[in-house]
Image (cartoon, rainbow, N blue to C red; front, side, top):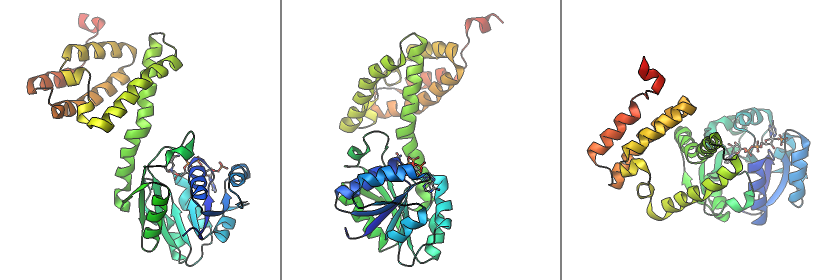
Length: 295
Ligand SMILES: NC(=O)c1ccc[n+]([C@@H]2O[C@H](COP(=O)([O-])OP(=O)(O)OC[C@H]3O[C@@H](n4cnc5c(N)ncnc54)[C@H](OP(=O)(O)O)[C@@H]3O)[C@@H](O)[C@H]2O)c1
């Protein structure tokens, strides 16, 4: 397997992580390209005996298995611009896109597939692959090959059908990207009470780590603490009133998340039916700030 020549079209966060990891595991990376030449050159310098290709066609010409690691919207463009060969393997790394965006390669006689690492690559990417899940999709024999490559990188494998990819990826956005969004909102709120952002983030991080550790050790429902888990409806009311003065959109988000938290609290077994109904009513009813009450 390690004799296969791998090529990367795209030399960004994902391509860097995967190509370096494959190289460390004995694979031969022969060519990388990028939109501008600079990132391909930088990545090629990290991979011995790898050419920084002047264009995407050169990668296809020098590789048996090509990873298209461009932004999602560019994948179909690349797939249709390159002249693929019979017997070549062409894979994209998007979580949400179906395999058939690579159909131009299939028409040329290539095997096509998807190889999506369920991980976020932003800082120190090489450390992030062990134990992750790779969602793969392909026909045989490429399917077996991609599964084996995922295992060599220390990952687990799930097989996904194209029709399920958008939901699979939307779930990943909730668990990963929106965690960043929620952290940003929390830091904004602390800023509104004059705590500098960086201090806020540093203070919130142990709380977030503690939550993630709890999810790992005792499961999702048991990890839920806070006013909804305790049935503290008065605290929920105070939150809504305070948030509404700062930003009604954030109050709306708090309400939505709160309503989705009630079933988790019930599952945990700490919230009884009448407490749940009380909190649901509070979360659904509009806040009357003092000036509104006068009217
Ligand atoms: N980052 C993640 O956490 C992550 C995780 C899982 C899957 N993915 C998937 O991995 C893929 C790449 O994402 P990314 O985060 O690595 O993106 P990225 O960091 O923005 O890198 C994109 C790369 O594509 C290159 N590129 C853009 N247009 C091109 C073209 N027409 N021809 C050749 N190269 C082109 C860019 O070149 P320049 O450097 O010259 O601009 C850049 O090197 C996406 O399908 C994404 O869904 C990403």
